[in-house]
Length: 110
Image (cartoon, rainbow, N blue to C red; front, side, top):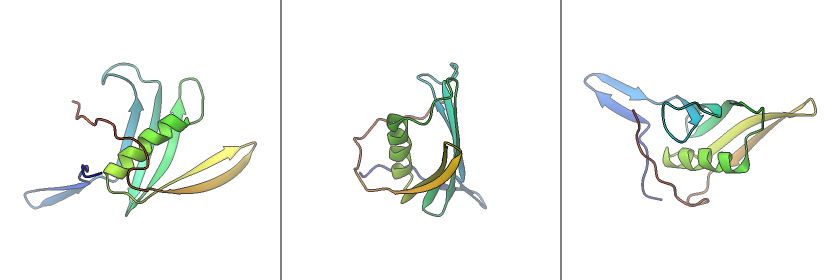
């Protein structure tokens, strides 16, 4: 995969680095969204801080694949998250392998 999203840009004497992302599950920006996920970048790793959906569903496999592809385009190497199931917390780290999932179109929105 050749296309990437730059995590840093410079303007004048400032360098801006993307450290946090709020991802909204919605077809069109500005419409009501059905889920939100907060991601935090640290080095080459992204941590999924939280995920909340209007139906209280867990993050689906398809939704995770979308986050995975986004992180791959950001040049990340790992995704980590915590899950609580039956009252037991577990942590997981997923390595990002280039071209693991099919490409999707990324477009900038206002």
